[in-house]
Image: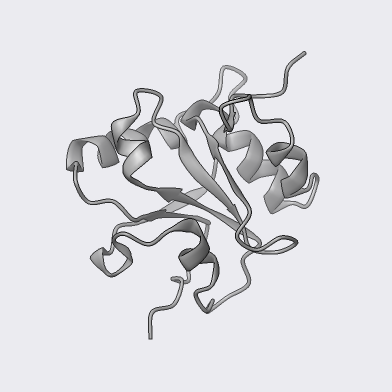
Length: 137
């Protein structure tokens, strides 16, 4: 049975295997420090067993360890110029998701990992196209 992998850091799960260079670029962009020096603590998993899974399918997978959220790299991520990843809720509203540009991934990962904010606070702050690009000031 397929289960979400146990990782020491927040999981970034690859579900699209069409572009290796895009995968490598998304991984690098996701861990790049922000202008203020903040960076996400991420574990990247590239396992073809997860190929093609939707956010809902991933949310329904059994978990080896506790996870309240994770990120997905899907076909939109590797084909869209902004490379927006999927942020997926596994706790309060399992299966709820939105997209996030790599430069803002650290904010979500950091705040959700320490329960400083709720998933909904980020999900409710997406731009009209469904992508989180940071909080407007």
